[in-house]
Amino acid sequence: MSPHRIIIDTDPGVDDAIAILLALASPEIELLGISVVAGNVPLEATVSNACKIISLSGCVDVPIYAGAPGPLVREQVYGKYAHIGAFSDTLVPPASVRPQEEHAVDFLVRMTRQAAADNDPIVICAIGPMTNLALALVQHPDVARGIRQVVSMGGAFTALGHRTPWAEYNIYADPHAAQIVYASGVPVVVMPLDMTFQALITEKNIAAIGENAGAAGAAIAGLLRTFDRSDMQRFGRPGGPVHDATTIAWLLEPEIFEGRAASVGAQVSGKTAGYTYADFYGKTGLPMNATVMNGVDEARFLEMLEERLSIYGRGR
Image (cartoon, rainbow, N blue to C red):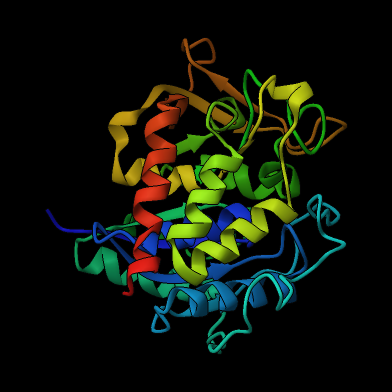
């Protein structure tokens, strides 16, 4: 079977870092490049973090492209740890690579058009605000033909939000972009909080990754302990979610996830901007534009993380 040809569109982020390292540790995936957007932290910091992650992986030939510095319409909002900014050199060693000169949106357009011409569409793993992808689709609608599917971490349907009571952060940060992607006609796989809250990484898992995955594992362990997202009151048990890594895990082992077809959209204005809604029963008469994941085999997901990331401890 040919590897999944993917682009990761991201705003690194701790779980973004894990998603990138998981993709690079997996021979089933060919990572064509990383397009970076402002989100968790400002663009300068997300680009710095992406360069550090790629340097840490040793896969220094994977190109990085800086993209949108803010959302399409709404005022900019950053993530919970925006005040910390870029990963410190203590947590993640300094980068040995720099971003490309080409803009991330131009990179997305170029790659998807080539994929369409080759009749070999690619997968976009959208694990940050979807501003870059929305700009590509609005400016050049033909690029949709070069995208096999968008695997998106974002949204909350039965779960309450985590950035606001009603919204998951990636959608809240740029709801207009999310709605453009949802309405583009490109098939979307949605990894919402409903599902990511079911797979919590614990100190036991973190310790195993830190001990067995070399310098990359040590950095991941340090990041997870520094930017702890455990919430006993909300989850009722120890551990915290690793949201973005589920997009890569789904490409590797879709059988460990459960999902349902739905018509998905995002509220773009008003007090509840960023709220995602899903019609699972055809009430609206709108086409089913997405598959929403609502279940995951937690044990296997965490086992996969430990197994795959251990490659960094064995020497690539």
